[in-house]
Length: 485
Image 1 (cartoon, one colour):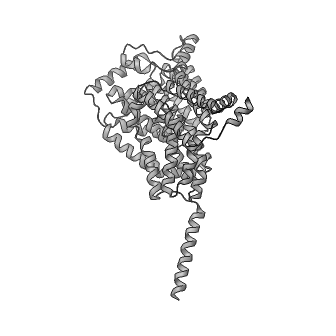
Image 2 (cartoon, helix red, strand yellow):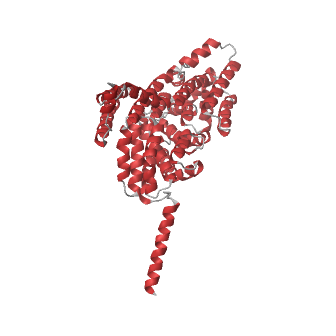
Image 3 (cartoon, one colour):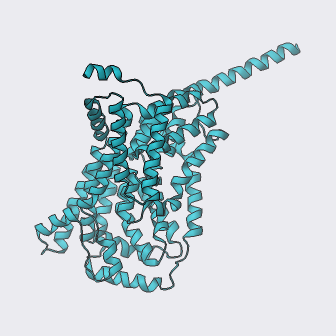
């Protein structure tokens, strides 16, 4: 029976692959956008339908299981990082680290220029640390609390935080996604980061201008009264001091020393617990364990502060972890049965000019984000599918690695069922569809990358292609001179 099933399996055609992908998009889009469902249910439904399709076509259960295992395997480290971030958030709130950042931020950041300041701060710190998730879950929470207290649109503030964090993640040599894009395209890391600037700097500057236009001045006439009330609440109920800067300094040192994310997070969780015991010696071990597992519960009596600071804990990350497992499962199945590869490779081979090649590669990265919801796969799959096509068109590997960033990693934050988007939405408490229109950096990066593809500005070409063009020009000149003689 198994032999019959193996013989019955036929390669997936381009048309069949496209039908499956479009059906997936329809189901997930309707579920999340039209009916407002959590992404998990539509993704689970799509997984069930893909498995049913595979069995009808003759796939073995071993193949299905292997696809699931291979898919989930790539997400083990990110899953553990999310668990540690859940613990870090609760410990940092309890130890007064995040409340201290809020209080000092109120004194240092002008309300008039608040939103562009948020974007700049997250971009600068993100470049130093190299982790958008860490920025969003630490200083991002503090800045978000400040913004809502000042009366700014929460979705606008969240968009500025996420955009700045993505910029930092994209341009830092410490970033996992930046290193991945460079490795997949086989380009040198620092040359890759330098080449990113052709699309990244324009996207950054336009984003900054838009945040200045939309985010200057508080929309709430009573903002100063609310700020003073919040500061009083924080200083009364938490240990607010410059001592709270120590974990931030440790995080910078770990980034400078290139300490892995897991070790950095474990160190900061431990440091936060030590600070908590020093500041509040009466704290019991059981309360710390409960806080790490279930999150910190703020009981200041100020409803807005309590809503903002009652968060964190391992259990709070379980919904994100569940979605990661589901999306990685789906991605593993789609890769196992060559559905995405079948849809992408013929497209890559039919493209002729550089503009269309760049555009198709970016759209492929966006497509993988939409269909799979996993940012690493949005780099890996288009990278493998388009590498030879880029080289055939005379484009350097640096051109490909930039495209993989502009169409892959930055877009995952805009997909409601994307791993990064779910993390950001759950951490800040703002839905993906709400902050999406204000996440300007992610929206603009692929646009400027496509413009580069069609204009040729900043588009890195292979030296051999330039040499051949120069040789052809020299031959033509010599021929004309010979005719003139």
